[in-house]
Image (cartoon, rainbow, N blue to C red; front, side, top):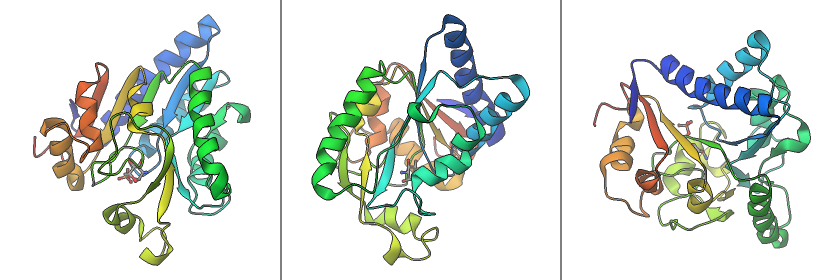
Length: 245
Ligand code: GLP
């Protein structure tokens, strides 16, 4: 676990590691594959990466991205969609080629979801696997939308959201009744295949789940707990989120 006084320092640390890998790969002419999350937690990292692009010539033209999840059903242009959120928060501000951006589609017909998910896994493989996976953590201990009960081996699939998770999203949807019941998410297995993983948690409200994920039993009930066994997974927390450790 890496603990920082402030969230700004945590953001800097994670961004610096991503920046170094992108620069190294760019000089070798090879791609950098990033796994990306949504939520309030990674916003500072996205802001710092945009600054590096604007002020320090960080070139994203060889960066390939895979987002963790999307609500289902969800129109990609909806203000609630993770696709739109990613565009506005990050993609519109750096030079990642559109064809390098992958994010689960929330607007495909139900009968096509399974094939879409299988294909998503294959695209990750074809890209050479994820070099750095960035994660937040939900209050149920979920990574992506891998709610309690998600197996260690689970891959990209459609899932049912936990009531706690839907409750946490209710404000941004202007009411619980507007929050979708389902989502498409990369699985625990897909996430654990990444070379390096940063799981970030900021703020006091994350302290109980950080304790369960970092020090608790490794269990399907807390999907983030599986990260304890990953050789290159780092919990990046601020003082408030670490207060119960
Ligand atoms: C959602 C996302 C997760 C994210 C979590 C926490 O459930 N699917 O990927 O980690 O919210 O969000 P926040 O960072 O806003 O606390």
